[in-house]
Image 1 (cartoon, helix red, strand yellow):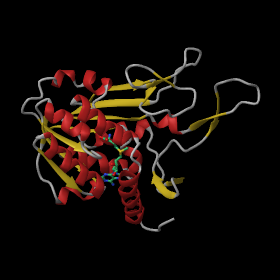
Image 2 (cartoon, protein in one colour; image 1 turned 30 degrees about the vertical axis):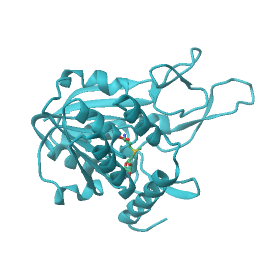
Image 3 (spheres, protein in one colour; image 1 turned 135 degrees about the horizontal axis):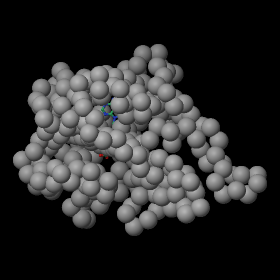
Image 4 (cartoon, protein in one colour; image 1 turned 90 degrees about the vertical axis):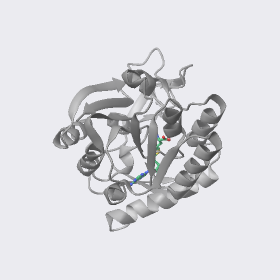
Amino acid sequence: MPSMPNAYTAANRALWNDWLATQRDSDHHRDVARFQATGSSLRPIERRELGELGDLAGASLLHLQCNMGSDTLSWARLGARVTGVDLSDTAIARARALAAASDLDATFIRADLYDLPSLLDERFDLVYTTYGALCWLPDVAHWAAIAARYVRPGGALYILDIHPISATFAQIASPTGDPLSFRAAGPYFSATDPTAETASGATVYTWPHSLGEVVTALRAAGLRLDFLHEHPVSFWPRYPALVQLDDGYWHWPDHAIPLPLLYSIKATR
Ligand SMILES: C[S@@+](CC[C@H](N)C(=O)[O-])C[C@H]1O[C@@H](n2cnc3c(N)ncnc32)[C@H](O)[C@@H]1O
């Protein structure tokens, strides 16, 4: 394992560059294809929960960890003035190309989120981050302070992310034939050292952050909680037992006791 936190980030940057350049059938590429085919890659939860911002015309939106920009540009198409930030060079190059090809105005910045304050000094109506964000970040309190500084007074931060409890267990083949057997699989609470996993031949570094730690960090950063919702659906087939329905999400089968797989928070300054 690297010894410095920024060495982990450098390894993750190289990994994301490689993944996005080589794995053409990933969820991320499917998001871009959906955006190109339908004009939007947004999913039902964020559309529903940000409905009160339905009139996004003219609202400014900062998308943290925007990947290849399809969600960022989907909000632009609904009228928002968008800025997207991501660690990956490939992601940002693709996002800029997608904006140009779609004839949409957008600013995309390649940066480690923790370096953003030295590159961007604006306030936004909505700071937005979704679907696989916080696990890539070592320090949740520092993330919250940075995210909150970009929210204008009266503006909001919205996060929709993987529920941390879902990373603590993995489905196993059961010796008793029970189709839903699980084993403990990972930590729940924040840790200084990342969890190192091998994916497609490379090492990926991620960090767990408990729900309590996220909420407390947002509060400490000066934001007021509007809601915290837990959702029993996933945006990818996290466990073999999950079933994809027409809304695009992966759901628990009928015989399962549903556990949360995503959570969303809106917090206001
Ligand atoms: C699972 S993707 C998020 C997908 C996103 N919901 C979207 O709009 O497609 C996670 C993203 O976080 C980015 N990332 C990882 N570490 C980061 C960091 N330290 N600073 C900024 N972005 C980072 C990765 O490059 C990747 O694009």
